[in-house]
Image (cartoon, rainbow, N blue to C red; front, top):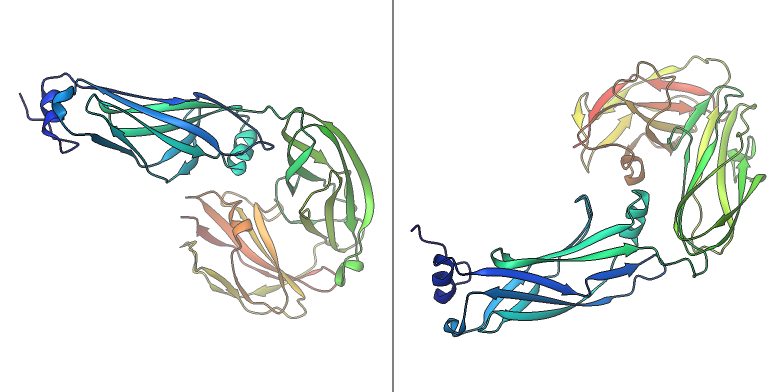
Length: 366
């Protein structure tokens, strides 16, 4: 018979394994956990490991360690990893327990709700089966119907999921607010817009439309704005302001601009990054200044986009005095890893007219 490696450094266990007598198992109590955005307090868990076939001949306690706890969807997608080792000391008879206070992260709940997952799995592996065991607890999300309405996140994007738009006069466009919530109650919000010329200085927001929704049970909802004004050339801002319930954060503001006709634009020379470069943490986008520019817009397009009439996938606004910048984490979050994109820089003057435009360059995400 081929020798079996001693996984635990104990001759008794190795001899039992060679004889085919060792079998391991693990369990956790409670085996079911209920969680919601209103209830993410630590949950005491008792992990139990049993290895049969060791017998009293082992003579000394065995120690098994689980290097981390992992939370996944039922299909196996990882949503949370807690890198806290947990050690179980087995008695000579082969059984031992360990206690852990586990906390499900609110961000994990939000991610699960985005995916439509109502059930998650919490798993720890002790040792290497059969010289150990795997224990799994089931986490049920929800249970917040009786609590008050609480908003954990409000984010905005346009109807094409972009964060910045450049429109032709009277081109139709709407904004969408994504809202993560728990509990039940009435959401009251207000769409507001700032129009030219107030956006040249401190923007002045005026009401556009109110929104009232009855929400229950926790989850994710969307609120769509009415058509946004786009008759006057210039720069605009739109936002969704939550009036009730009270929230400890400010909603995002989305910028968009309206051009008149197809104005001619001077070419902007780009000095970095190089064509076909790979996006890195230290990558800086660099260009020559454009005459008359008071703002620049860094735009990213799908590599297969045939022309610039399509909306950018991502982008960000930069002040006119700036001629180089790294890509912000928010803009990069809209780019998929391992993909090739086309990017360019646009210069706008005080009337939000395009006065400069670079050629397209390709860049690949890592």
